[in-house]
Image (cartoon, rainbow, N blue to C red; front, side):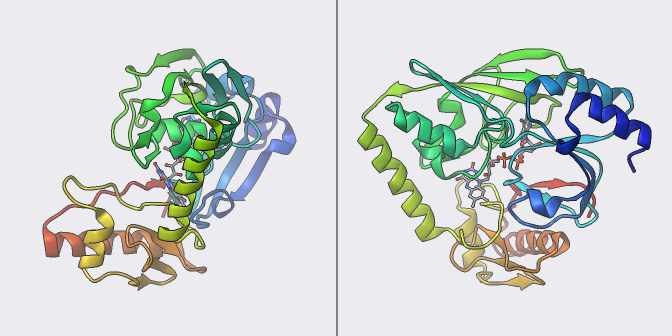
Length: 304
Ligand SMILES: Cc1cc2nc3c(=O)[nH]c(=O)nc-3n(C[C@H](O)[C@H](O)[C@H](O)COP(=O)(O)OP(=O)(O)OC[C@H]3O[C@@H](n4cnc5c(N)ncnc54)[C@H](O)[C@@H]3O)c2cc1C
């Protein structure tokens, strides 16, 4: 519950039209599930963040940062606290020579397109990843032998008290679908990508090729959060799940995609509980049959 006093305070930091109460998280996650957040604040200028973060810390209201919600499973009971969304209202992209400076809310697809338009190569892999720069940096998003680690020069972040820090590539400690800030309360506000000069047509062709491969292999016609599980060492999650006989296996409205077993999809009426149960079932079944532990790549948010 957000008190009247807190509501009034929030309006001092963020325009009233960007503060939503009892907001369904299903509207802000690509799985299209999730109950109500007490409050969802849409950041339209990174300058709003320091004061807001300081205030939320001071009054001890739990908060969680989201970008495009494309790697999240939000619980049916929603989130008791404030969701701070840094997405398309905060999406400035600037090019300077071989560098692209992108605000945290810019879509990776848009940054990749900008790179292509300027004849800069390195970000082709990101064209089909439906996340923001902030989410991509935190997750070290990657595909087709590319990853954020290879193109990020510096990341500007705020700590919980609103202080600004600039982290370089090595301080970011990028790893497989992780970074130094995945489990730390840092908020990404901007990222500087360092790219190489390339041929515009070749860059566009590579992006189109990657997009085509995604369309062919992934169940993009259903809501999901992409690959549900991380790749276990020496294996592929999708193959293990298929070999376990789970292609098309459903719990409620959640289903192991028959097109790509590494994806759990929402066939229309799934609840977060259905999806979570199916994830657990797949983990147990794969472990029972192959003694391999699958770790979710998807992040669980809120109350289930
Ligand atoms: C169809 C589909 C295909 C996908 N393909 C790929 C793929 O090929 N490769 C891949 O790596 N991923 C893929 N994903 C997963 C997802 O798109 C990426 O992980 C993406 O980087 C998440 O970005 P987001 O903005 O949606 O982050 P969210 O899902 O909103 O958040 C993810 C994490 O980042 C944190 N976060 C977000 N923004 C910030 C910020 N500004 N500051 C601090 N923390 C922040 C959140 O707190 C959370 O912990 C796919 C997803 C879908 C639905």
